[in-house]
Length: 422
Figure (cartoon, one colour):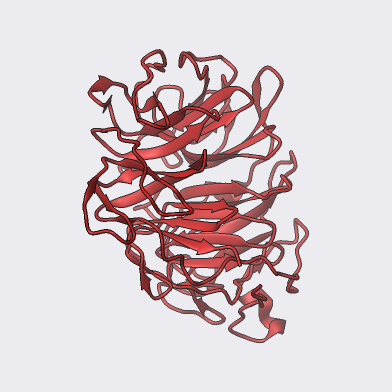
């Protein structure tokens, strides 16, 4: 087991200089005992994706399913190109690519399972020649379309989750967030929460109103959404909102932070990118893009933030870890660590402005934070930056890293890698 220590670029008495800690929630600047961090040395038997990027991964039925924008893969020890159009699956123990084969006419961004079938979301409108806009149900072994399932959506789907018998989908379609019948695709009416607007109207870079990513707590009773919106259920909610999943309906929590009202740059008027819950369900972490805002704790640009759960207004994060101007795109929370990924060069860098400010530590494209203090650990595998990695997936084997790059841990691992459990 690898023992982690906090990586601090200045003396311990200067912790406030590297991570902003808000007094509105409990925090600790001291290292906590760590024995379960994943290895910095990647597994040697992961598939080799030959083009494009990985946007989502799913662990199901002894296989890892991978969606994104790619057309060809190779086995880790093979030379033969295997055609796989934006979706494939492989055995994580052997690296062998399965027979799952489906053809999409555009990108795959979301994956979920009911324990048997595979639900796939994205920007496509045909699958295996069958018309399906944004969402399709497949046989998880063959990739055949289940034609009995049709959600009749009007736009893209960028996240999915199967929760208590319902398939929850988020995206840019008319409802933005909906709970579907997993057999027919019909709207169950369980989520009837209008999502509207854009954070900063009039900015041509805003794009369509959408739920980009969401995360459901382990109990299946709370859901956090992030994306491009300014109103949820008739309440002012810019870029982030907390919902309560009740017995028969969904309601909007009074949880909210006015910090999300503050713009970063005109080029990124909507800047929340991913969210994940802690295993105990007591808090969650949001990561963002946005552009540098050195020494400005009123803005959450290019950062990771921890939020404790309660239904109070005017929330402040427990801590903020700033990259100093570089995007974070994905987050995976464990009991011991908060793993973050993007095209970051640094962490612990609130004073950085596209450079290393006082106290910054070098963390190339991936890093791990102490859940209590928010400070970066010494863990530092490094990887290519690229545009960044849109997904991290934790399994018993370790941390799966999906991205658009080909090097991690000083080795070649094309667009997908496993950092094994130590």
